[in-house]
Length: 585
Image: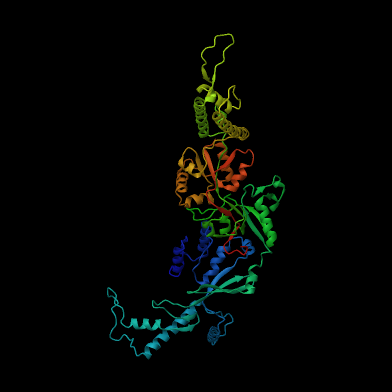
């Protein structure tokens, strides 16, 4: 694995999952078994470190049991690196000399270019010769006469002149068959260039350079740009999607139809518009496992629509697929075509039956208490005003013909009559007595105006309460769910909603994820329809967490027995997905 050490180091830095396989038997049967194991593991990015002579045998066994038509339609290409630039004049001259030398004794018709190992050997000999020539010019004696080392010494004793040879090798700099040859202080080769080649329909062509400083340097030309789009209009793309109303649905007469005509819905129309705008043919295929796409922690493989794109079984995903950071590491997304968020679905509560004191509902409890205190306060004030005002006192009337006693002063606004007057005004019924004094009439007028406003507001609210259904919901937000355990709650088993709670660092959502992960029986469902049915059948004991757009759609569909409560827990969007580096992106 020394050659692949840099690949492994890069994988560790970027947190890639790498599986190393050592091929012990270099037979055709061994190669075939190797590719069968790779196919079962769902790994689709394979780095092969082998001699060029074995490459054909390996690829032949790898492709033997694979349907190549989809690779041909997908415009599959083979990318490789080349160390020797055969178009360089110096390399061409040496290659010609090499060819002439091989054909001195017997001309060879099947002469082939030397392998990269031969080029490296040639450069190695030149480096050694250059280093020893420099040592000779510097009059440094590197002979081992009289100072041979002990091969059995423990610990090993280095050769005294070895440091001089090492220093001379590090100082060599020349142009060889493999390009610039020079070494750093650690003796590693540096400042060299690799040529990146790609096999296309028109043959092998160079697409980029690679070096240690600039890394990959693409060669952008007009012809190259044009060739990347070859086949877009001349092939049929596989568009993966998922049956999820109202995005993708089967028509009622789908059995009598074929191809894309079997489907209807928002995403079906969106895919048709994209194909019409870009100009390509496509075929809609429903994802086999019915999942959106998540990475299996055990198999280290992607499932659902994301897996279809990652493993090359589809070219495009047009569906309610949420854009997430984890998915963007393996596939590309377009800009969001719909914005949404995670919401809570519960079963719609039953209508609350009217109670004995339901007439009090239009006004709050505090308002009723204020009215009672105002009623008592106005009655007491009216009683006191009538007591102190002389206009409220009058003589009692006596019948004629009888002896007239000493006149007795009376006042009609006693405490009980004051309460009766205030109650009559509040009930809009009036009373057989009324204030005579100016102060009493002012108090009565203020009370009448107050009762007019209160009764008008009460009547308006009462009409609204009689026409609007009142339902009491036990859950109003995510906090309410997290604080209780009586009502279970869960998400789709494989999707972005579950991943959101799994990766969230917010205390409330972490608490909810801990509950969902350990709940028995499991609170996760396989499809949105299963979650909807579980909400309906649980009699209010299960809440389903899903995208707000789907929640609102289900709420408006018969039998209209579910409802969305609270606001959205986050903000995200649906996007169209393509494999990494796809020309459709």
